[in-house]
Length: 535
Image (cartoon, rainbow, N blue to C red; front, side, top):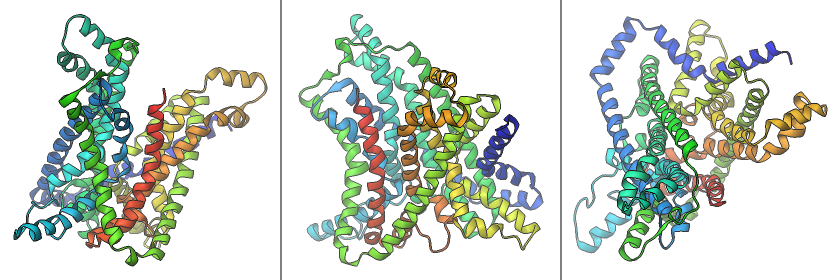
């Protein structure tokens, strides 16, 4: 393929995947008196609430995931106690739980008509509400904290395991007690990893729609849907989406800086094989304390929500809509499979292009594609629907709106914008383990171009490609905001049905699709835990 045509295809691909962001920028170019009036009205009414609630939610979740993630990572890395090896992988289980499923589970069990409060009133003769309402901002903080702390746990555990041992030994030789070594050596070394994990957790928090909508929390994402679908005001939705995107960009920049500091530390850290590199054995009350530090997050983020959802599922087993469940599952698997296939093919093409022609155009395309995962689903929806509105305003007879909103084209496009970055990261990690010398040897033996990719690269990239497809498949199965708006008529997915049934207070019926999503999410968690246990 000629170099110019190849570069043109890459540029078109990049434009296709960054269209939502470009559309939001174009919406501000249409800023006029009417748009200014809408923005002033928002500033006087809903914008302070959205900003204040989102800020409180982010600060609270940041503190929660930092404390829980760092505490659990320190416990399993620096200390040895009964059950430690089981906790190493069990602490990843909340990754399999979509946050909105956790919200449904706690609401069903703890609400006024739930089994716990009902039993307390009957057993002790108490009248009225026993516990405060969980569907509020503190309840959302609880849900996000115990659903998202594994981001901090993973990165902090890696930082402590790979970088703390040698300096901890040096501090011990200088006479520092264990508490001071942890406080002044281990924790500062893990600080960049904690910052990166907190940034990832906050991006997920800002992008969430299910928990915010179900709990009635007025965040930017909930406001975007309200402005677009309830008030039918695309200008307000675009402006809110732009503000949300700016917040996410700030978090992405902070995460990038933290990752750079992590790489800087890694260059100077060496894995030590001394006795100090081994976890310190705990006994008695200290061992029980470490055990509780690890057990409580697993209970709150996985065990209890699953148990709470199993109870209504078993109680209403005979009334479950099994025929509809099969249709929901087929729709979910069809969309997830198609999106995983296309995103993996795009990732392979871009990674191959970066390998063979690492010019500034190729690097730019890869970097733009990598930003897609940071763009919230609500922003992608607005960014895709805005051009549809512009085209239909100019050509009312255009069929573009039909193809985007009434077929699978629009929703698969949104999935590619959001999740191609996930596949690309996995494929690039696979390419990083393929020596460039193999390419030179293959060329000397007569294999070039696609033959080189087929005969040399592909056999070495099969595992990475399969992992990429699996990760995208699971992410698409759990995706709620984009699916809720862009799904074709009569094509409900498991995530959408679980949200709709829970919103209608039919939590017994919502348990079946919700637990199915949990089972699907367990697959990559099991693979990740197996990878971490390998020496």
